Every structure is written in structure tokens, then in C-alpha cells.
Amino acid sequence: MPPASDESVDYSDPRLSRLRAMIAEKSVLRGQFRLASGGESGLFFDMKQTLLLPEGLSLVGSLMLEKVLESRATAVGGLVLGACPIVGAIAQASYAMSASGGGREIAAFYVRKEPKHTGTRELIEGHDIAGHKAVMMIEDVTTKGGSVIRAIEAVRRETQCEVLGVLTVVDREQGARAALAEIGLPLDALFTISEFDA
Image 1 (tube, rainbow, N blue to C red):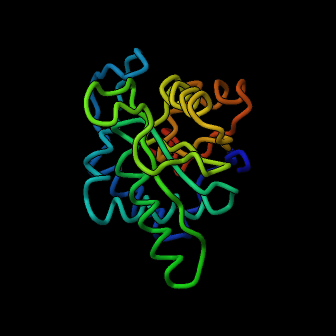
Image 2 (cartoon, one colour):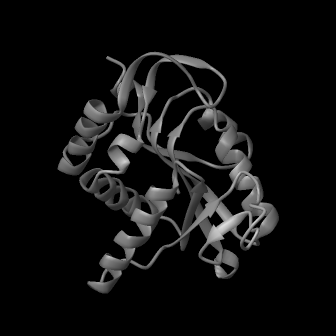
């Protein structure tokens, strides 16, 4: 997966324009917020408000699928809970595309922060990714990269899969790109925080 361009997003694709408008209207909150990374910000992305709407999830799934198909990945995964609807949407969109004669099917999996003490007690849930050689990690919002790096470490430790990179809906531009580069992975994003920080 090539690194994301530093140029602004090309909104000639009406899906990108529509998704940006939805995120700006439904998911961008202004105030004072503590982030999962430990920092504080006057701008917070409550992505559930977009991702749990049929249109929003469909847009994210189709746009991210196109980026995944540019790589060798045959599965996508991410941390519970933010990535869960997205990886499901990518898998569903890939099936629809494959069934109509294009693309390839992309499987999905979730990475837990720690194994559950019930059920299968697995750290990695969903499709058995043991048979996949290359996977892509997915996030809804990326800040410093700590959470997704822990998920990457789990995938590398628990499987033989090569992690190709990270794809996120919004990059908050607070160090994740550099942190991922240190472990040899690119970060690609549909949007950056600067596109909403007006």
C-alpha cells in the first residue's frame, strides 16, 4: 500500500464529498475532550454517529475497499470496537463486488484488547486469518497510533500474516504516521483532521 499523499483529498468522487459532509454534520463535536491517546482536544470525532447509519457505513466500506484492493491484502482487521463496523462493511462490499464479477473477497477479523474469559477465549476473533498471507489494519480515527500498533503486534505475534499497513477514516495528524513508519508501515487516510478543523 503506498503512503497517503500529503495533498488534499480529491472530492471529484461524490462519495468522498458526501462522506465528508456526513462526518462534519454528525460526527464532529467541538468542546473540550480527552482522547483515548491521553491528550486533550477541542475537536472530537464520534464516528459511531456516521458509521452506524446505512449510508455512512456503505460509503466507508466501498471507499476503503477500493484502497484495500490496491494492495495484496486478503483480510482486514482492527481493534474492538471502533473498527468492527468498518471491517464488516469492507467484507460485505467485497462480496458484492466479487459476486458481480469484480475484485476479490476480503475477509474480516477483530482484535480484542485482551482475550475474553468466556467462549473461545481468543484474542483475534472472526474469520480464521491463519490462511491469509497479507492483511490490512483498519481504524475509524487515528491519533498517535498506539492502539493500532498494539493490534499489529498481536497479529504479528498470533499469526504468520504480513501486515501491509493501516487504513483509517480520519487521521488526526498527531504522530501516528511517524510512529507507524518506525515499524515500517504506511498510514493511509480517507480524510485528515485539517479538513474538518475550520
